[in-house]
Length: 484
Image (cartoon, rainbow, N blue to C red; front, side, top):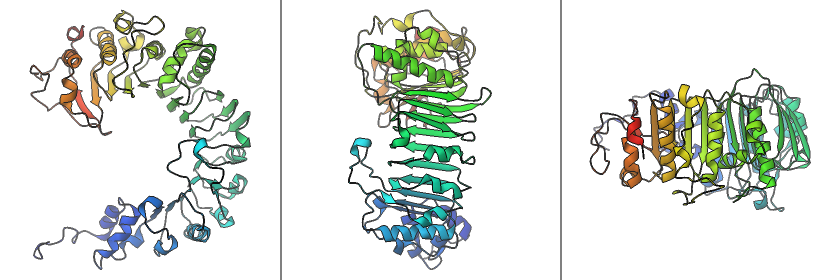
């Protein structure tokens, strides 16, 4: 730097410098102490301490803890704690002395993908007695630990609890007897409490996440005040007790653990009925996200129209592979969401979709040409979003259907947004011959040349999720331009 030029940080007060370094990793935050005398002790004011194994070459822990005046959170990620018990216990005692509000102890292996990856010889770190004296905790995350939930009763301020990769006991009894708990996450857990029958009574719980921990046949969930529910794993029998008047903001269902099937069977029929009961229990959800298996299974019921009830969903997110066997399920959900305002299609791999001529008598080339409409298409659907758009035939067919039935003058559809995956340039998508027909679906002031490239790009934007927005136009839709 030119010595005559003033450091741009020189005029900033310490409070702003602290805000800036708070966005750095803890390791980088500590390294700023070597910049100058002024920076030497700034990192000591940082309130969040995080030790992640991937960020350090040395495995020493306690030597890196500065003498903080105040600490609000401590995070320790260490996949092999064998031989470091004393150092870890010292860090926990440090957390107790500083009365931290958030504590993360993660001793799992990042390479694990499921229960089968966990070795029986893996060391599960036993939490010391000092841990249970942390009465100031508001948020607690424990992965691959040995602990006694019954001793958590002293943590009266605890609002958020996340458990993963462990065999635990009596957790549901603790949750039922701890009214202040608002958020509970259970990831890759097992144990006797997840036996043939499990009951969870959580009258104040607002958020519940269950990820690949359904090692049971029947599960009763009494959640009268639940606002957000996320489940991933195999299909299993669950009964929900929810207050009828409660507003459920978000429900996420992912049954990707289920095996792929090529034709209906008694098993898929039974699972379709179970999934339909889930959807009925959460019919008050404002946002509903479902996986491809849901779209495949719900039509397999013996009487699908009988099992599935109308929902109050306003935003429907369909994670789909655009396979022919998902088409009926898509139409069923459109029919059962009469107040739907936003429809999101999240295209999953494989992409492009394999060319399947038909499934169960369904011809993908003619299925979406049927002149069948639903209440949401005529009265409420205003926005359609397609993520990971690839311009495949099945994608374009369903878009043509939605715009034909939902666009003016039949419906109230105002906008269609298409996002391509990361790494795909706009030119790659527009060179697809089938996409040429899609670009004339919108009546706008943007002109196109022979290759469907835009001559004006002022109506484009970048998606916050990383995908590139191809089209985002708020003007009237041209129904005549989308006919095949």
